[in-house]
Amino acid sequence: MSSQENGSTWENGLDEYGHPKAQGLYDPTLEKDACGVGYVVSIDGVSSHKVLRDSQTMLERMEHRGACGCDNDTGDGAGVLTAIPHKLYSRILKSEQNINLPEKGLYGTGIFFVGKDFVTSAKQQFEELANECSLKVITWRDIPTQPDCLGEVARKYEPAFVQVFLNGEQDSVAFRKQIYLLRKRATHAIPAPGKRFYIGSLSCETIVYKGLLTTAQLWKYFLDLQDPDYETHLSLVHSRFSTNTFPSWERAHPQRYLAHNGEINTLRGNVNLMAAREG
Image (cartoon, rainbow, N blue to C red):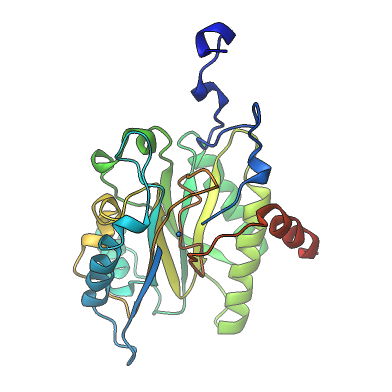
């Protein structure tokens, strides 16, 4: 039956993330996953901007390992995980908000994907949870982006990107524990039906920039990645080829700690196992 005959279109079958809903023979709970991954590291631990640029070269050369949508300009996903670029963030917060960041390692930061109509509420809820976890939000920052480089589909489902900075316990072990607990609590407590909220990363060591992008668009879209003050001693890059699971902004890799290029044939089983272990 055509879309005109049944009064619907393919778009009507998408949720607020741009994922298809169950319809006909398609069931999203039965999806599988697959992809290309690369890693650049300074083995002596010295941070530089060159590590980031070398990883860009690597990722762009893996364009063939990724895929794009029917508009030929929306990537299945691309991203990069690096050490927190302390020099960059310190400069930006000082110049834009007159805020002095704590020393490297004494604060945490992360980038959230938030529905554009949900930003204020999400921030408020997150700050309340942070207080309950003995953490304090230092400030928020809107991540600068260049939407003009996006494909049509990616632009339509583009979230708002907000960055949080927080501090708490001076003891490093306790601080890391509280950040982890905050991320887990916020992930479960803040999202609501029709309200988009996803924590791309939250850590005192690493940061993740990713999205529904091609390997070349990643470096154009996130303006931070173009700044010479973005220095890191490691860079994990990923180009996604979604052979089974539907691509989305949130499903791009790296996923907080890792990126994989294998095919997970038991996605539903893995999700159920993790849910069973959460207690």
